[in-house]
Every structure is written in structure tokens, then in C-alpha cells.
Length: 301
Length: 304
Image (tube, rainbow over all chains, first blue to last red; front, side, top):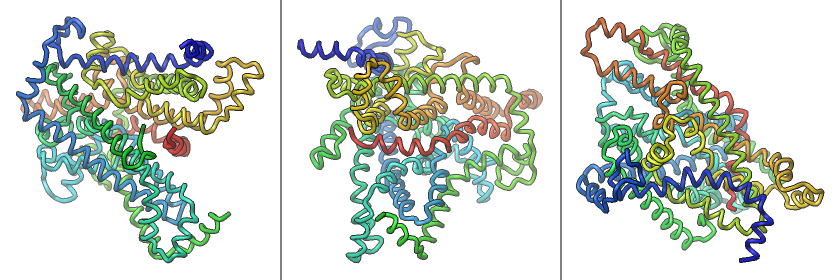
């Protein structure tokens, strides 16, 4: 203990340099964690969080009572996570391999630069672009195809629309990571495979894909923690927060955002948030445990 | 030299390479077309837009939309200022604060560092969520409509600290730090004059990603900012959308009032012009930072 204190005193400059970050984390990450007690309180804005009376598990009963809403929101959240992660990973890996195999390197670089740009456009701006394509009177899609679909009234189309928008926005950027791994593969491996008579496809299957596995597993692991969180902008902005679309587009995060703006259902929302945080953490610990069993070198911690 | 030989051998491009190029080109066009539509939409004549709809080849062009952006000139100017202020101060503060803790965490004989590592890991695994953050910030801190809420919560992130720490560990030799100490430089001087400047590539990568995050943040603004003088660009965009919706949802109002309202409602082309104004600076800055953030992402992916 004495040695520890001595060591800390010796490193007092490092302690001081860590302090600003430690404080920022405390006030803007740890305090909201403590704020989760909200789920067990009958919140009154006038009294504030700490003075509001406790109410036990009442909020959770409320959650169970309005099960259909809650189940639907959770289902949407999880389904979108699965679809986005699966389709996204496949497309990102495919794109990375395609760009890596292309011999016209200059062309590849130029194309990649364009593919990355969409990630830098905020969903508030993307929303207007999607609207230009889909609005029923002046939208490009309706005019081009000569149809009159009221896209913003038809919930059934939105899972597909949101997937396309999400892929347009993220795939180019996501492939950068995989490309950097591919650039690091020893070219002798390919040469050896070629000498052994491996075709281009066999090379991809037996050399390229295995070398991507660690990166894919790290990226999947990191994403698991965010399973209960969605890209709020996509679901809140791009759908124009349209009520008719809620059955297929309402996710936990956009639901919470709406609840805050209407100042309603705080009890229900607090219980849902609590559930969201706990499940998210449990999932990442579980996933990490599984990965560590299968291959310790791929685990996050 | 081995790899060069390999490159040369690969240079014999077969038919497969051309097919691959065409497919990739098609995807590139898919990525670029929506952005192009914004630019074409901004210079399309408003009447043409309402009668014929959006098109890549509009029958009539006009600069009215671009000009009428100047209609909300003052607010646009203010919002630009707010966004620039938030982006600059947030990025500088964040990079500095995270650089300092990253350097401290890279000191191997610093015993408190294992505790600090866990301390910064926990927020990545467990979050309080939007609602409790909202309640804490507004009812405990009383920070509603405070511009600091656009800056401070987004300043530090576990992932960025890990990226910076890994960079210090892998690219800045301990001998350099030690020799500075022998030469009599204090800890702070060692960091600010020697280590921090050497972290430039990692800082450029992290900084650009952070700056994009600050520039594009709409959620904190929508939740906390109420006064016009603190409204960032993204919130201005949201407000434009809201005002269009009001018009669409009140179709049964008398035509006279409607015509009057239409004067204040931004038209399609003007909206597109505003979108350009909002996304423009990032598009211009991006090519300069591209090589850094690709490098930075790569560095960060090395596990520490």
C-alpha cells in the first residue's frame, strides 16, 4: 500500500494529466449511470431526481402492462441490429476484397474516396435527400417509375428503405478497416497459393478470408454492446418521425427521444432504458466470453 | 522488392479485372448520385420542381433557391458561428484531454493506470442512456440551453483514448521520453513539447472523426438548445423540415393565409441549397484528412 502511494506521488504529474478526462467521464458518463435509479422512482421534475419518492418496481409493472408496445419496439431494435450488422459486414468485407484485388490502384483509391463521403453527411441532411427521392408528389422515384406510392404512409417498405440508406451511408467507411488488414497480408502467401495451383476464388477463400477473421470478430464484438442502441438519426430523422411508420420503424432510442419531447411516460421509459442498459452490458460480456472460449486472441478483454 | 515483383506480375489485367472495375464503378455511382441530386436540386427552378418533381436533368435551371438561402441569412450566419465554435473548441479540448490521459496510461511503471484503464472501459460497456442523461443534465446540473452541453459530453470517448494510447505505445520510444527527463525536462514539458507533437498522425485521425461528430451532432442540440442564438446548423435544418411539415399538415387553411405563409416557408430548391451549406465544409476538409484517418483507424485496430 505504501509502495502504491509512493508510486502515485511519484507519478503525480500523470495523475494530474488524467484528471480532466476522469472528471468528464464522471460527470457525463458515470452520473447518467447513477441516474438509472430513475427506473425505481416516481419522478417529479420539480423535486428533481434525488428527492423524488421511490416507487419500487411499479415502473416495471407498467412496462409489462403495455407489453405490446414494448415488445414491438424491442423486436424492431434487435431485428434492425441483426440485419444491419449481417448485411453491413458482408458488404464491407466484399467491397474491401474487391478493392484490394483490383489492379488499377489509382482508380480504386479514387472510387474509395467517393464511397466514404456519405458517412460524413448527417442524417438531418440525409433526411432531405431521401425525401427528394421518396415524397409522393415531387419525388424522383415516383416520377421515374411512373407510380404513385405514398412512401411516407406505408410502413411495410421502410425496413428495406432504411437498410439501403444505412448501407449507402456506412459501407464505404466500414470497408476501410478491412482494407487495412488486407494490405498487411504477406504477398508471399498469395504467391505460394498460386504455385500450388489455387484459383483466384480459392485464394480468397483460403488466404484472404481467414486473415480477416480477427478483425471481423473485434468489430462484431464492439457492435454487440450497441445492440440495444440504434443509429437514432436514421430512425428519427430519415423517417421524419412519422407516426404511421412506427410499427416498423420505432426503436428503443427513438421511442425514448419522443418520450422526452412529449414529457410523457417517464416511468415506462425509465424502465425501458434500464432494461436497455442492463441487457446491452450482459450481451457484450456474454459475447466476449464466447469469443474468449473459441479463440482468446480475438477477445476484447 | 518482393512485393513490387508481385505487383508487376499482377499488372497483366484480364477480362475479370475490367468486370470488377465496372461493378465497383457502379457502386461508386450509387454512392455519389444522392449527393449529386442535392446539387442539381439546389439550382433547379422552383416551379419546375413543384410541377415536374426532382430530376437529374431539370428542364429549367435557376439560382433563386441559392439566393433565397440568404433569406434566413442572419440565423444561418449565427448557426454557422455556433457550429464552428462547438466543433473547434470541442475537438481541441477533446484531443488535448484524451492525449494527456492516453500518455499517462502508456507509462508502464504508473501503478494507478490499471485502475484508470478499467475506469475508462466501463462507460463503453455500460451506459445510462438518453433519458437519465437528459434528466441529470437538465434537472441536476440545470444546464438546459447551455452550449457546454454540445461540447463536454462528446469530448471524451473510450475508443479514441485507446487509439491514442496504442499509438503512443507503438510509435513513441520510451528512450525518447527518458532522455528528455535526463535533460531536465519536467513531466508536463516532456508531454507538451515532445510527446504531443509526435502524436500528430493519431491526433489528426481522432481529431477529424471528432470534428465530424461535433459538426453532425443534432441530438444534443434538439434536446437541450432552445434559444436562436445558440442554434447549431443541424438544428436549423431540423427546424426547416418542421416548418415545411406545418404547411403540409394544415392544408385546410384559407388560401390567402397559405400564400402568406408560403413566403416564409423555404422552398424545395432553397432547402437543397441549405443542405449544401451544411455539408459543404466537411466535404472540403475531408480530402485533406483522408490519409490520416485511414492510418488512424489502422493504428487503433491494433489491440493494446
